[in-house]
Image (cartoon, rainbow, N blue to C red):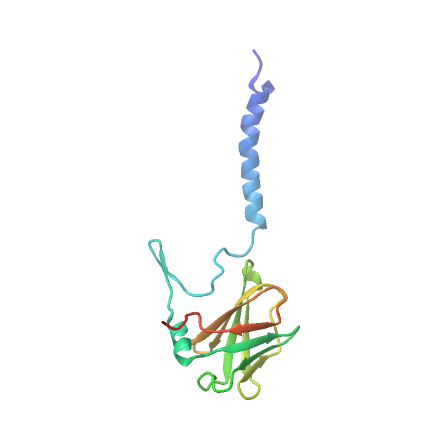
Length: 162
């Protein structure tokens, strides 16, 4: 009869769980960022997620649409004539990265002409979900910037009822 440590099957029985534990610890150490990429506050009730959509409804009521232009180090938002938001001096652009919350950006925009809002910084050259809102959060329009895209149309998240 051999000692237990001389049996190859025993080493396999010990090694497989040990490797799994080490891999899990390594993954936990190297992982970063959250899985929930939405910056919206969400109330979770059982299996249902509930968020406030009043800002989307308000943007639809106001008929807001804009075009966002991204340069290497600047952002310009142009509203169509007669399609401007209620009087405000500042807007906020939220750029939510598709997979890495560490690359999310909050960019304040200030008025730089008739129906134009500008900022001296821009999100990186990646895919972003974009949200443009007033400082009070009473309305918001959204768009998606694909990799390398320089112009993005922003519109209400809701469409008009038919």
